[in-house]
Length: 305
Image (cartoon, helix red, strand yellow):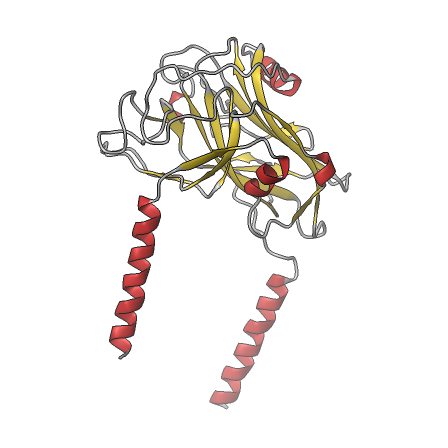
């Protein structure tokens, strides 16, 4: 009976994993602010969003929610890329193919204009600061337990058709309390900079799908899943969040960011990518665990006495 039960559990787990692996990526375009904001939060985020502060800047099909992002190429040596369900923002068209890379220059021009925050960080990095086709989700939020948490974190994948041939720096930013934390591990902005940070992209050749050497998605290059950590300004109770992506220099060769799991946490690092994922634990939990450990020790002493 026990052996059969264990076999049944193992079979169900295998079927579950197979179902997840075979689930197709689905993107649902929307401009609904509440839908988009809810989709980028972790299930138990520890954050409370001010609904009246939510601002979405994007065309009707420029952004949306996504589900089933579990992409694995048939090319040896290329990693699987799996990220939780969330939101996708693009610098042009959010109605891209989720089955193959159809174009070397996937482009749309929603005409949403420039973004001053992105222009500033691009300029500071010595890059072209002309920005177009901005796509933004921003809002104010509070931390449910400010005494325990000093940071927020999330996961994302950056993808672009600028890679690998274009000398243009389409980029994105994750601003927490006005500071951008979206940098590759080498310190460069999350962007396409040929010959500088190309090593952070996984190749997805034009014309391929998941059966013949590609990832089964539109973009020419995709980052692996990255964790970004942003420090909370201890001097304020109401914090700000801004996720933004832009075209630079032109309005063609679009890019996208898949973003999920925003949550509160605690970190001893300085924020950015490479800072460990903040631990989402209440401050009292370590004390409780220590207490439980002490009770266990006392119980063992009684048994051996």
